[in-house]
Image (tube, rainbow, N blue to C red; front, side, top):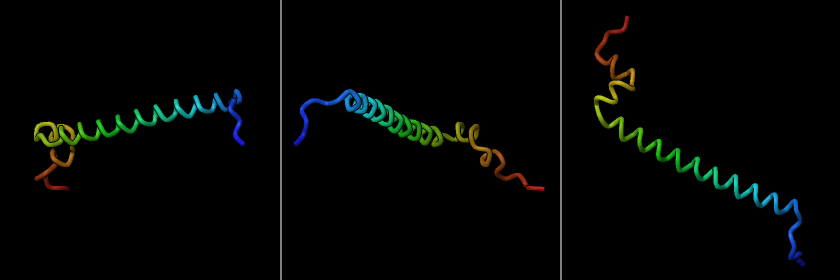
Length: 63
């Protein structure tokens, strides 16, 4: 049989779980937004030349 009244511990746990879930969701969505933005920016040659060393070194002979 289930109790109808939560204890103080259960209330704090539910609050903490909701808080953690909210921030994990924000972190995941933020990560996806950053990933999409970086991939969009790397589609432009001028930005890619500035950000990626390999593009700058392309065609230069190694010693």
